[in-house]
Image (cartoon, rainbow, N blue to C red; front, side):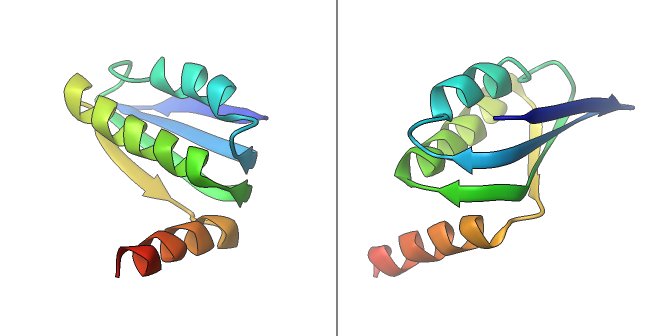
Length: 95
């Protein structure tokens, strides 16, 4: 699971390339949660996510919670088709 990381000014830019699934969340959690507090802002690019399941959604919820705890402003950019489908499925299930 390739993760790109670059800090520009006060923003850490992190990109995920590949699956955001039960098979990859443990590795991703370690890499992403360690970014909390490293910069005032964290921009998470999901444009290259090829598959996303419930575990991936849970990880995003944890990242959002931990960003708030750490005082890190979180923004999510570049949602791939897989990310949009997973989020739409959750919205439909809530009805």
